[in-house]
Length: 400
Ligand code: C5P
Image 1 (cartoon, rainbow, N blue to C red):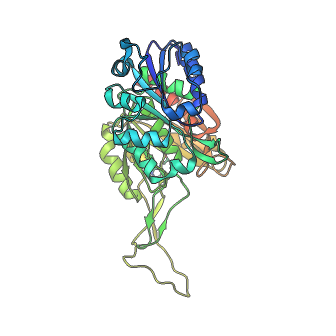
Image 2: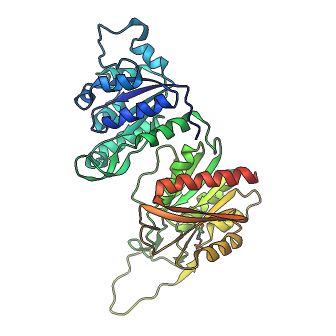
Image 3: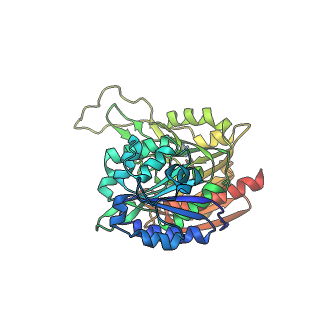
């Protein structure tokens, strides 16, 4: 991505240990050509001295609502208007809660309330605080209101815990800021994505399913949305939250997923079939719970519709990316599937390989299209998703 950013960035820093990373973010932004002004909340000052940010941004740091020394040329209303983008990094759980509720008891909150400018938050907190329903709900609500939510990442935390809640790294945040100002490769495109497993009822309490976590499809939805697409995610039952920037339709069974997809596919420019759809469903699911017997029972199964093949048979079929999970001879089987299902691209992974596939946080993919292929080496699913969306956008734009 091109490294020029002739923009005014207002960086808000709230109270969290990740505030030390904000110094690096300022350095990267200034290097990229941005004008940076920094506003700190009182608790942020417990972690980093304003002088650090002042030295790096080349401007005084704003900390007080009522500041006798403030130059009248840049009071807090003007500061808000000056910004092309307000980036709050780190955004603490407390700040996020207050932002959601419209508080204005420090300069940064007042600025956010007084401003019409776009705002992005980079949440950073202990993983338990992040996992609390209150915090997740606050973040989702801010996302619905149009605030960009960048991160958090998962991993080791300063407190010794491991989990989601780490602030994104400064170079990742810079990339998102640059991406915000440059139209993405999928700007204005409608992207339809299936994700997760399906549940095929045996009776009212039991079902047939598989180990798909939905993580890859959700990461693709996030990456496609960051590339400028309008994303609809059709998701089977999973235990993760959809990205705030996408429309999510929840389904349970393959037949439900099929109906939603077939209704929406004709309007989509791109279809990504990432769901691990059950190949079979029970012919006649019992309406009452099946009682345990001493003898065995038999389930009769019928094949489910192949959703992706139905989509590629449509007259105005969208550009379609399918997935293949293989245990051996990955490339040959995937290429055969690419042709048989009339796909434009296929992403194949080898299941059973450590750190790749269904429940893992990382993945390795080999991506094939009619006249080429590329290996996306083992990385976090979100990183792989970004690379895959980039590749898909290039192929899509090449054939369009
Ligand atoms: O044939 P197989 O299940 O290996 O193909 C995998 C690809 O087909 C994936 O893209 C998956 O989402 C899609 N698929 C589908 N409907 C099915 C089975 C698979 O869309 N019933």
